Length: 313
Image 1 (cartoon, rainbow, N blue to C red):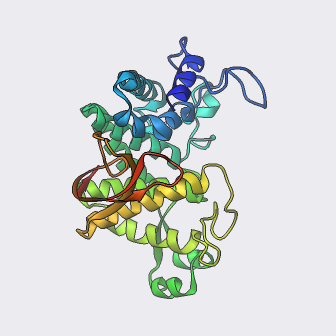
Image 2 (cartoon, helix red, strand yellow):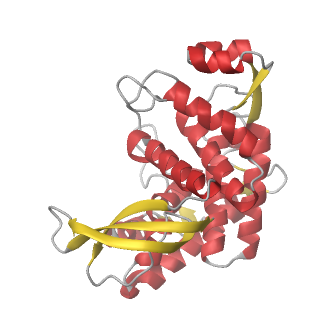
């Protein structure tokens, strides 16, 4: 990871525009002139924020500097204060339109979530305020009350019967002009709602409906996995290895905190590890910790089960 991060920031850093290139050379229908939000955002949420706190001291300061710089440029260049959203790309007016690629609520709320978390990591209050308010604003825009009869094809018979006397079902939509939504966008909105709920408990009603629908409509109860669309394709980029897993993890952490129960997570750690141990992107108090044996195939790593309480974003 250290070598990979070094390669990306040495080769893809765009000095002229102070951000990261999408591609270095034209090819495969991509242009080096493209300036894409995900070119910045995916570095932050893919590895930088998660791993910087546990990097060796020899490289940690560089990672901190790169994480701060990249977040700063993302906020300065890709965030629109007027529209209160992140642009999916900024190299042309057309790609900044609300219905253009990557201008959906899933991408923008992920950017707000990362801005909040990076702000907390650096004790940068302005980023924390921007991220929290941005999540709230985006969730409000993405909230959509679907007529119950319209939701019927997506719900199991038992869940539809449970909700059939309601005129509408609180759900999520993808964008201002698009009520279609994929499971990964739904997951991002749920995770932001879970984060805000950990802060002040204000999204419980929305989460009751959206989390229940996610488990009912997208999860394949016969063969396992989560579809990109309800009960459909399960193989897609960033699917089971990221969005599905993250949704499950954040859902577990927030639910355990909501019900005042400890959250148990499993770690693979060196015997002499003295660095930070946290419940994913959040913070919490360690109440118990025990070794449960060697991690097969990874010499020197011990499996540990650790319980957390008082989980906060």
